[in-house]
Length: 212
Image 1 (cartoon, one colour):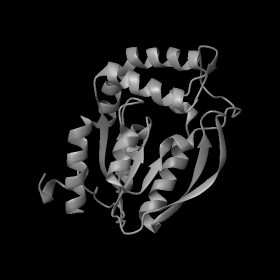
Image 2 (cartoon, helix red, strand yellow):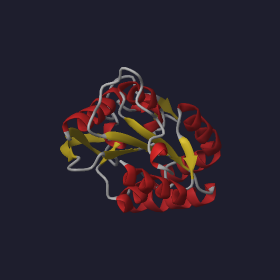
Image 3 (cartoon, one colour):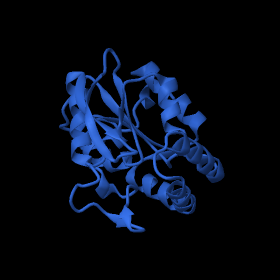
C-alpha cells in the first residue's frame, strides 16, 4: 500500500475535516476481530456495547427469543454519533454492555490520545459505512474471513468461557451462524466492507498507520 492508497474512502466533496478517522472492522462472530484489535493497540469502540437492553420495546424475535443478530437489536444512531464525536473531539462517552444479562450497566470514556486512526469493531459495523463515509470520517471498512469451521470453534470456545448464554443456546446459535456465514459475508461486502483474511487485514492496517 502506497501513501496514495492510505485511505480506502477519500473525503467526499464538502465533508467536514476531522483530526481522526475510523476503520470499521466486521466479520462473523469468532473471526478474530477482537484479537486483531488487541494486537494493533489502537483506540477502539466495541460496537456490541450499543445493543439495546433486553426489555426495550419492539426488539426483533427469532426462535422464541430476541434475535441479537438482527441490526434492529442495536442502536446504530448512538454508535455513529459516538464515533463522530471521538474523531472530532478526541474522546467520547460509550455505554458498557453486559452480554450475559443483555443490559447496559454503565458508561465509559474512549480516548483517542495521539492516534489519527480509531477502530470500531462489531458484527454491525457495516451498517455505519454510509453515514461515516458521508460525514468524511471513514478511512476503511474491513470484513475478516477465515474457514467456517475454524470460526465456529473459536466462537463456541469464547462464548462458553464467557458464559454468554446457556450452552444449548450457544450451540444452536453457533450452528445457525455456520450455515449463514457465506450469506453474511456477501451482505457485508455489499455494504462496502472489504473481505480480507486476518493476516492481510493486519498488514494493510499497519500500512495505513504508517501513512496516517
